[in-house]
Amino acid sequence: MSPPVKSFACNNLQLAQYAIDCFHPEDEILSEIRTRAVQEKLPNIHVGSMDGLHLEILIRAISAKRVIEIGSLAGYSGVCIARALPSDGELHTFELHEKNARVCADSFTHAGVGAKVTIHQGQALEKLADVEHLAPFDAMFIDADKSNYPNYLTWAEKLLRVGGTLIADNTFAWGLVLQATFDTDSQRRDAEGVRTFNHQVAHSSKWRATMLPTGEGLTVAVKVSD
Ligand SMILES: C[S@@+](CC[C@H](N)C(=O)[O-])C[C@H]1O[C@@H](n2cnc3c(N)ncnc32)[C@H](O)[C@@H]1O
Image 1 (cartoon, rainbow, N blue to C red):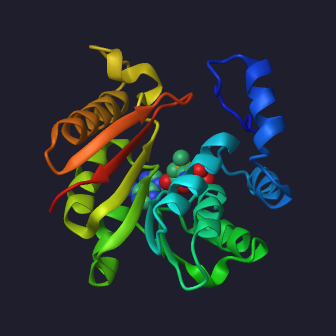
Image 2 (cartoon, rainbow, N blue to C red; image 1 turned 180 degrees about the horizontal axis):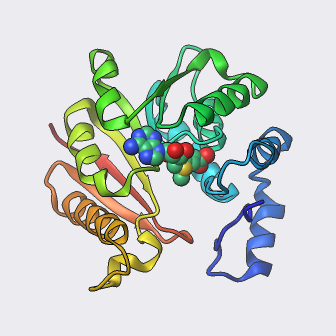
C-alpha cells in the first residue's frame, strides 16, 4: 500500500507522524479505499492522506458546489472532495479506465457520497465537453494526464467562475521539471506539460497562483478575471 503521507513534512517521518496524529487526515472509509485498490490490483498512486485533507479544506474554504476532477482511480481524492460539498453539490470526476471507474463507484457508495458524484469514463479532455453546459464550476482538481495540464488550464480558464480554484497535483513532476534530458518520450511530455502549466498559471493575468511544497508539489490557483 502507498504511504499515506508520501513525503509530507520534508521527508521527516517524525514530523509527518506528528501532523497525522494531530489532524487525523484518514478515517476508516478512506483507508478502506487504499485496501480496495490493492485488492483490485490498481496502482498505488492515490493522493497522500494530508493532500486529501488539503483538498477537502480548500473545497470547503470556497463553499464550492460544482467541482471537476481529472483522474478518479479508486475514488480516494474524490471522496475527500465530495465530503466538502453540500448535499446538493456535484463532483464530476473523469477516469480513463472502465475498471477504475467501477472501483471508484463502489468507493463513492461506501462513503455515502454517491448521490453527489458523476463518473465520466473515457479521455478526460474529450469527455469534458459533456459537462460544459453545467458551467460555471467552482473548482477543478487535476491529477492525471500530465502532458495535457496546459489544455486543462485552458478549459478551466473558460469554465471556472471568477473566484474559482484550480488545484493540480504532481507539479514538481517528480523532479522532471528540473531536467533538460529525459530517459523516455513520456517523461519529456510530462515534464513539458507540467512546466508549461506552472509557467502559464504563474504568469497569467487571469490567475493568482502559488505552489504548496507538498511531497509532489500542489499548484493552487484562484481565477481573478475572465
Ligand atoms: C494519479 S491517479 C488519480 C488518483 C486520484 N486522484 C486519487 O488521488 O485518488 C490518475 C488516474 O487518472 C486516470 N487517467 C490517466 N489518463 C487519463 C485521461 N487522459 N483521462 C482520464 N483519466 C485518466 C488513470 O487511469 C488513473 O486512474
